[in-house]
Length: 609
Ligand code: F6R
Image 1 (cartoon, helix red, strand yellow):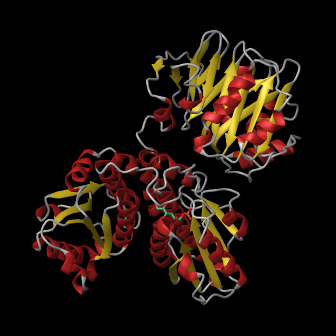
Image 2: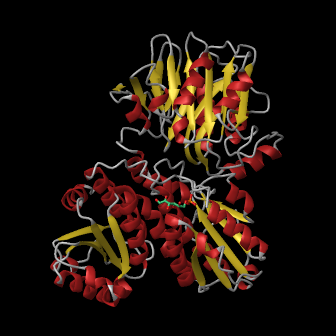
Image 3: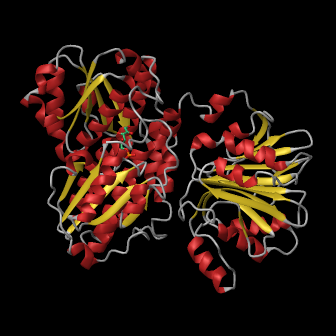
């Protein structure tokens, strides 16, 4: 989720580039850079850190050129640094590229290019694009770009600039947003509308597979085969604030809706082409290593802790190793039993949570092997852990975590599959079956997101209740905990999650007429028992909203409201059942007029104890 800007016209390009990048700052980034075509050379400046550092470097030496591109980077391949910041160039500085997304096959391409004599200076996947362009270029810029696009796999929005073609910028889109803003005698390119909204409101929104040929006085859009595409102008009517949220009312809703893409990005590059195994390049564990581990701790806080609870199920079920899940704030003070046969997995979206970081340091001190699952490349936790796997969810801006949670679940599942295939605790057929189901999850999340009306109705009906209970067994209980946390933190409704089997040990006393109970019933292995628990609360006249898998015909016999999610394996269904719970929390908070993105008393990153 980096930011891209481009300018071609009659004015000094760098002024728009810096302003456009500033407008994209809200998305989060760790480094920035610009490139401006100055005739006989392309001026490039980049800097790790905030845009102010880049502006400082450019002070008194702003390039005069009228064609340029700029970028704010959110690191994926390679840590945040000046060298890894975009734009990237080929060996001779003839082609310059900025890129959002992930080039999945960059490693083999890079090896081939190096073997043919290309010199790389960064650790990024993007740099291969510039070197590929250098290789295939024979004088026709557009054909060369089309050829490069045929060689790369993955998701991207790309903008290309060439010293030899100072009158044009080319851009291409695949699964990452890109817009072209249409001006008079000047045109703009951006990954997001806020960057251009104060310059023009007339835009072309590029679709996957399209290439835009952007000149000062014209814009042409072609498809990958070279055929002209007839584009309709999209007039942006949003104000600047709405534009930052991509037209959504809140970042939280935007991030909930980004989940299909976020989980697809998390999986990206990590499933073998034949769908028969998991590739985690970040780990080089073998059977010996795993046989030597006799205990696993998963340590985290808040939502990340809830992802850890699901992770425990995955690893215990698939790898048959004992897993304990601990709150980082407890673990670090309770003298945990840890030695060199212990694997400690910490989960943290921000990579900066102080309790999680301290727990990681304590684990290392005690001799444990450590693995971090985090969203932020170069974060303190990523730097401290022995091994790191990144979720690649893109920046999460709303305080309430949504896409970070689902991407953590995906990674925990892939990690468990990777461990199972390495430790040989899973058959080839079962592995294939689960990978096949995993690949369907992004589309199934989209399907779940499309059925929002009943959830809005429930939120309006029950949004003013002061207590809500969430119940479930097994993995449904783990998701219930996350659903209750979401409701509490953004709507300030008192919400509690209970393992359904615990109801009769105390909580049932609170279930009276009219109390809303959200009952998850997707786990086949405990379905009958869950159903009995649901009948128990229903018999006390609670208002029960069921969450079930498609094809369940039983629950509707007892409940007035059931929300269905698509069918999948019971291990994967938390990725779907959490979605209506996120939406319910969101719409309940809206009903109550709460500040959804910035709930009271909470911060996005908890760097103090
Ligand atoms: C809840 C939420 C928090 C975080 C927790 C850990 O929506 O966002 O509970 O999950 O503060 O944060 P990270 O994952 O950054 O360590």
